[in-house]
Image 1: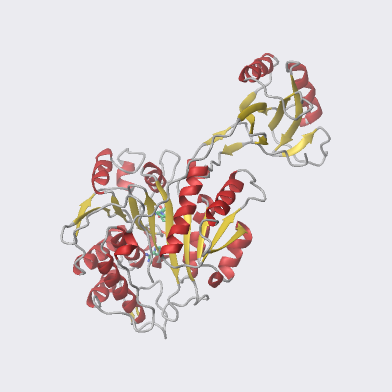
Image 2: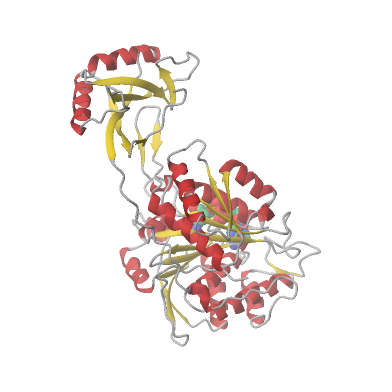
Length: 503
Ligand code: NAD
C-alpha cells in the first residue's frame, strides 16, 4: 500500500542524513504517554528527526491564553512547518477557542486525511474488508465559527463554502487517489437541501472528476452515504466531504475499524502540515499506562512520508503491523482468544521497537517510496468573474406581537417601506408564512422579509445599494427591529439566493 500526503510545497529536508526539524507537543491526558511511546519508536527506527517541543493545551489555556498556544510557540512551528501533536483537553466554557480549529485555519491546513483500515482477524471488527480514506475539508463550513444570537429565541451559525476551498480539497482527494492507486471517490453532501453551499461543493466535484477519467466517482447524500459507510464500508474507497459532515463521518469510520485508538490523521496545507491521532486526551485512562499509542504512531508514519523518510515510514508501519498481528494488544483492542498479550502503552512501544526490520506475515506489508512526496498540484484554477447585480434584500426582523400573525407584520412592513421596493415574501425558519401561509406553521420571533425591486418584463431589475439603505432607514423610522440584512444578487443572471420553502 502506498499513500500520499504531500502537497506542492511540501517541506523539510531532502538529504536523508540531515535531521529534519519537527515541532512536537505532548498535550494533555494520555498525550504525554502516547507521545513518549511514539518518539521512542521513531528514534529506535533511526528516523533522523530533530524535535522542537512546544507547550499547548489545558495549562496554556488556564494561564490566560484563550487559543491554547503561546505566541512564541507559533514561531517554533513556523520554523519547522511540520507539527506532530498529541491530543489536548479544551477547557469547557465559551472563553476558550479550539486549538485544533485555530491551528487548521491559521496554518491553512485545508485537507484532513484519515485512513481507516480493518486489521482482521487481529482486531475484531464487523467489517473485515474495510480500507477507507476519509478526506475532510478542514477550514470552512460552519467551522468558520461565525455565530450570532439575533432574537430572544433564535441563534444563527453561518455556513461558508468557497469555490477555491472546495477545489483545493477535492483536487487533493483526486491527486491522492491517483497516487495511491485508489479506484473510487465518493462525494458526500446535502445538496438536496443546501443547494447553494453544498451544491457548489458537488458542482466542483463534478468539474474536477472530469479531469480524472480513470477514477470512478459517485455522489451521495450524506445521510444515506453515512448509513452505507456504517453498514458496508467495503464498498467505499476514498470519501471527500465538507467539514462538518467529515467530522462525523470520519469518527464513525474510524470506530468501525475496532477502536478510535487505531487511526491517525494528517492535516495538509500548502506550507504546513500537522499530524495527530484522531482521538482525544482520554482523561479517564490518563497516567495509567493503558492508552493505545497506535493512532499517534500511524500519524507519525504519515509524517515520515511527508518529510521524505519513506523507508523509515515503512519500517515503522510494518513493525507496528507485525506487533498487531502477533497479538500484542493494548486494553482497548485486547480480546481473549485473539490477543496473545495484554500490554500497556510502554510495553506496546517496546514490542514495536523489537519488531523494527520485520514485516507482517498475514496482514499486507506497506511500501512507501520517494514518489510518495512528489509535489501535488492542488491550486485552484482561475475562474472568470461573473456579472453580479443587486436585485433585492432579505431583511431579518425581530418581531413578537399580535400573536405573531404574519399578515400584521406584512402590513407594518408595507406601510414602513418606500414605494420603490416591494415586500414579496415573509418566511419563518425558512418556511413561507406570507403571502398564503398555513395557520399550522410554528412561528418564532425571527422573520425573514424579502424585498425586491419591481420586476421588469425580462426578469429582475437591478437596484442600487442606496435603495437598501433607504429601505432600512424607512424601517428604522417605522420602528421595525431589523437584526440583519442579506443582499440578493444575480450572477450572470442566475439567482444567488435560495427561494423560501413553500415558494
Ligand atoms: P476521547 O477520544 O478522549 O475518549 C473517548 C473514549 O475513547 C474514552 O473512553 C477513552 O478512554 C477512549 N480512548 C481514546 N483514545 C484512546 C486510546 N489511545 N487508547 C485507548 N482508549 C482510548 O474523547 P472525549 O472523552 O470525548 O474527549 C476528552 C477530551 O479530549 C476533551 O477535552 C476533548 O475536548 C478532547 N479532544 C481533543 C482532541 C484533539 O486534541 N485532537 C480530539 C477530540 C477530543
